[in-house]
Length: 289
Image (cartoon, rainbow, N blue to C red; front, side, top):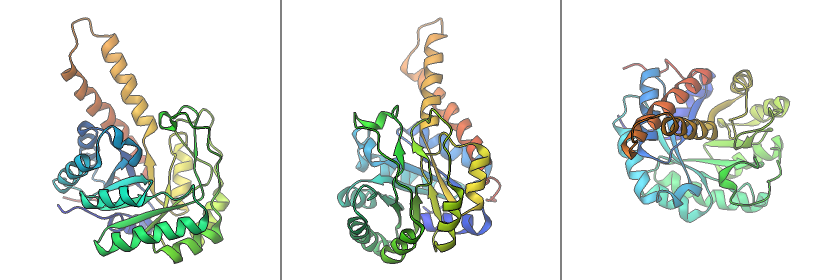
């Protein structure tokens, strides 16, 4: 199949009221798990690689691999740079095979966010690549390993009027919003502002995106989807489950263990978690082949 853009995948999702999972990867086993899970569930899917993880795997190495494996899939797959923190990194992802980029200017002033996002949109759209922007700011839990010693970031809720203006001024294809979730594994169940979400959906011309989904209940996910959320980012809980499965493997094997014992654990654990999320998000059985 071809490599799909974010717009290709999210347009029908918004129309038919389901969400497509965007699952972060940091290894080839995770890419395989996402694609195999999507194929077995007959679901479109989004493979994401976070800019912050480029210290683990360079963008110029991982994106060509993501692109090749996505094009070989039997279901629609998009490859996105998640939380691109600079114009340079988003352009590098675009150069090496991304079909979508998320530019995260949420820590900037509104005016700076618009200006930087406009730059990304101009270049990306000229290459047929979709762009996700962010308005508002999703908090980061204390136990998130990507905090890198930073203080906990304060949650900044998305303003509906500002969201409408941002979409109009930037031309983004999808919009990440902040309604009460947090990156990382939440120690307490997040309290989502569904009234705010409904108001944003009323004025938004593009699909909405929910980041920080690890602590959200299945019922809350479904309510978000009914109110315009068409893309859900999900990583921390999967990462934690994989790590615990590896720990169990190492601690409960009497014989000597080897590195090659680990990839199958990663593949199967990741795959089952993703299949579970696909069913909750309602994107299963949306593809026929």
